[in-house]
Length: 395
Image 1 (cartoon, helix red, strand yellow):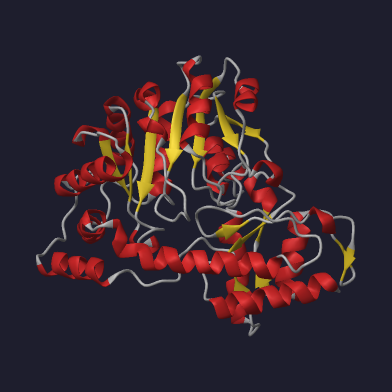
Image 2 (cartoon, rainbow, N blue to C red; image 1 turned 135 degrees about the vertical axis):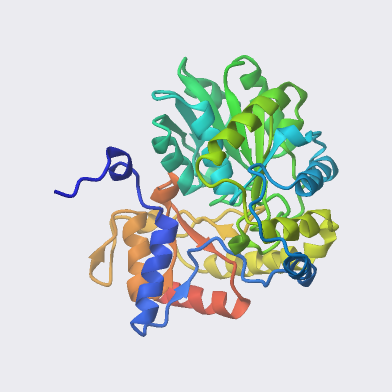
């Protein structure tokens, strides 16, 4: 008898990856699928980063790396934290991992015990809840809506805390909503957390450089929160380096030490060539990637304009990342193309099969009224995709 562990049986499949796989499968069958489901920049990695990788190969970097990352990379990360985030992290407070996802998993595994509670302001990235399940913790959603710009209030935070609360995950700019917390909003939330000194904060800032007309603010830069916050970042999104798989953390040294221990038994050190390339990425002026951010902003504006012409969609204007997260609940209970639309999953599947456009249902992110549309695609592709969506929904 084939018997898998309860751990894997209880673990949900990543719906973003599942939708991408479904879209690829339909493409292979000859269907003209436009995929707006994956969180991946469509730009090439900048040339100066590629040159640094080539140099590392020619310099014969091919051996196992230190579990927590090369010293010169950690020095570059420390400089980056100071320059961009006003955060001082010594090298023993930094751990380099195989992507920010591994960084988040490390943190959860070393801090959480069975039965501990994680607060997840919803919508949240799909893997947060799955990682909580792997850590045998319980995740508690704090619901928001498009009317609140998908942000929680201090009262909501206070009301969600119990004696079992161990962590809260913040993500700004947010995936999937694109919402960005201001310094003042974060400081108000910090006032609540100051009353609960046993709660740790994971601040996922992977989209920090992709923002439009707003200033990024790091939660750990609030003095009272520094010793309790673990800042997670990486190079995947801002530098178009998703496949290079480099993420990192800055946090209390005792947590970093534990993450190093955990990682030493799971993957050991991250890729040597990618680490050397990451030094070049982080040491470069942020202005080097402005061309990508400027293009994302133009695409955002285009998508908002086009979606605004579709009846029933409720939109906000995201200030960061590269996603639109429209409220589509207008269509729930309606029949489209002979199908009754009961929820966001039904609508996403309808758009995939009838419009040949892949999106991701909001229930994957703890927000069933919405769907996520990535605008990490050309303007021409986005225009065609939304035209297809419009035709199906008007039917």
